[in-house]
Image 1 (cartoon, rainbow, N blue to C red):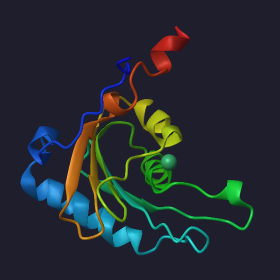
Image 2 (image 1 turned 180 degrees about the vertical axis):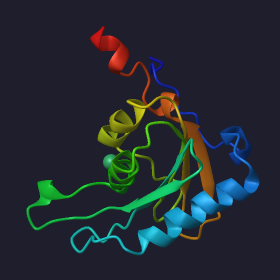
Image 3 (image 1 turned 60 degrees about the vertical axis):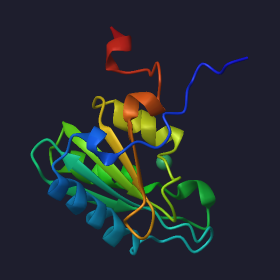
Image 4 (image 1 turned 180 degrees about the horizontal axis):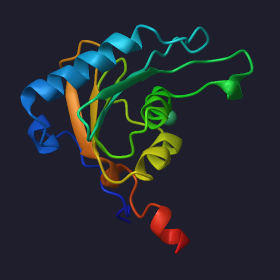
Length: 149
Ligand SMILES: [Zn+2]
């Protein structure tokens, strides 16, 4: 039986529709903030850089806690920083992990889709290997503000 969801797979960054310099800045910001990850338990460092429609980039790193459930993903840290600065519209997010197979978790996909469809650029720690998706591909048939009527 064919699954309902088809893996979009590896696509060139051009799909993201961002200027090459903007993409590079986003990738470098995610890579840099990843170094600030507080992940003593999993040792899985993640950095995220969220590009707002204003052109500003907001970053976040994942953080863990001895009470495991108190930790938070990098994507939601970046989103919180952007929202706290008054941003409400976004163009893209870059997530930097060990390799480009990283993608935002389900909770982060849901948190991001609240603000519309954006490009999701996934990158390895070297900043070179990339995969890009649309958020709507990663979270099909999502629940959003329109569902509340
Ligand atoms: Zn997450």
